[in-house]
Length: 417
Image (tube, rainbow, N blue to C red):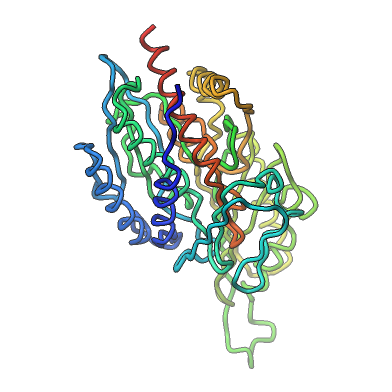
């Protein structure tokens, strides 16, 4: 028997959470990188404690953990449910003014700021949401559904289960991380200490998806050193590192191995930031592929390009460095196939279609899986992420809570047997 999810309470949670600015700051050396993540974490701890979860805690790094106790006798190994508190730095995240559209009637959705429009023709899946409740921005900021939709789903699940101790489940570890958007989500988290060997990130779009692969990812930095001198006496003496950096970027592939030219399982090299001046400039890039070995190929291509640019700019020096960010979670999921199969079984119990899918990006689950906690990613109603046209679907968030209730029961039953 399904017990109804409190839709309005879930919506209220989400609206409160998105109004807190938790934009990650990639240039910061602090963890978390922005104070709003600490603020939201404190609010969540207070709410969890009011639910009666005595283990609700925010550590010195801003990471929030709590335990929903088992309702059936054990012993049990906990299942972890994970979402991240930060939002993307790729668009403004302060002063979010969410707009609630009940019973969406179809077509384009005009936003209040700057003439922005969520266009049905440009938004896969929007036409299928007619009649549902959507939450948009006013067009000037992100909404923050990535990943405050996941946060709200887990929080509502926690209260739903606490209010219904007759629903069977084992212990559930709640985990809210910081700085996922800048690749540092589990940097300060000790997965072994909390005991779970299977987890689920609630950080996916739409409904019915079980993400079973992510990109493998490295970050690359190209530092170009030239020679600065007053432009009035620069002839034959100045080596303009900024111009050379522009030349380097221009030489990168554009018709292939670039995000704007790839899809599906195709990887890319993505220059996303250029900074500096005449004397020294820097190009930051993302290297992404579902095949980890391809990252080494991309790194070598950057080295080759650097040599070509140095030949074209005599006197210029270039240093190329790369660092690992995360790895494809698909390899780790093979060790515990039940993490995916039981998620599929839960959809079947609800008589809902589902699909295994891949993520052209990463989640906290990529790193957690590498640490030994098999962690697929589940849908929670996010759409148009990292854009001011972002929106979330309340109905899909409700479905995510319902799915988790059944999934947790199935885990308890499979473990007991």
